[in-house]
Amino acid sequence: MIKHFLSFEKQISDLEGKIEELRHLSSGGDINIAEEIGKLQGAVAQELKSTYSKLTPWQKVQVSRHPERPHFQDIVKNLFDDYIPLSGDRNFSDDNALTGGTAFFRKKSVIVIGIDKGKNTTDRISKNFGMVRPEGYRKAIRLMDLANKFSLPVLMFVDTAGAYPGKGAEERGQAQAIASCIQKSLEISVPTISIITGEGGSGGAVALAVANNTLMLEHAIYSVISPEGCSSILWRSSDHANIAAEALKLTAQDMSKFGIIDEIITEPVGGAHRDTKKAIKEMGDVIERRLEALQQLSHGDLIKLKEEKYLKIG
Image (cartoon, rainbow, N blue to C red; front, side):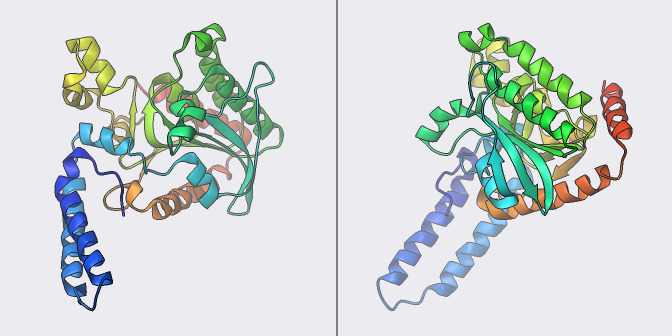
């Protein structure tokens, strides 16, 4: 059962609560209430379908930030075999917010890189809440160089509110690290696929979202600034975040319309957090299909594809 319900899911939460109450009563005696539970489960399914078919941009922002959405560590566990992480940037330190290494994806050798916000308080602090420091982006550059040297495809997973804006990060060249990461992704001549799984926030996300194919989960977002940040600039308050979310055009559907991304990956009804394994499998199926097509292209064609794709935008 989902532990965290969003503000617009009150009716769903109430129905789920009734189901749990009935299950508790059933386990304490011989009362057979399976039929009633079945009816309530049907009502939940119907309410989920109705609610999630007409989400507003601000509601999609909330879904993209749901703490139970698939994290990079979940994706590695369910989608890859023999994952061997690479640590450090050979310059300053390591960064737990961005991890990556070699792995097998459905029997194919790949380099996998991902940003992870963390699952619990300790994990989130360790991963800096998914806000990557310069050493994280430089580690990604190391991994891309490794991929290019051994002709390995690069799969990148993005879920971040943005790059870390702290004083130390700026002193160590945050902007330069992000720019170099984007440049490296454009330069390498191997297949590259990036998937925005939750939040795609600002330049911190762009650093790993430049690829031959950029994909988004159905309820993910991709934006130059958060709705709260935009609202604070325009209205001196974050209270108008819902209006800002509408104006920013940050949903996967908006990105597809503008030609920023190549495909939207369907999520289970009610969001990826309701069935993470199913969501990850769907991700894997789309990645496999896309990767097979890209591997038919020459190194020169892969670079040309990126060049044409990004010159066409705007």
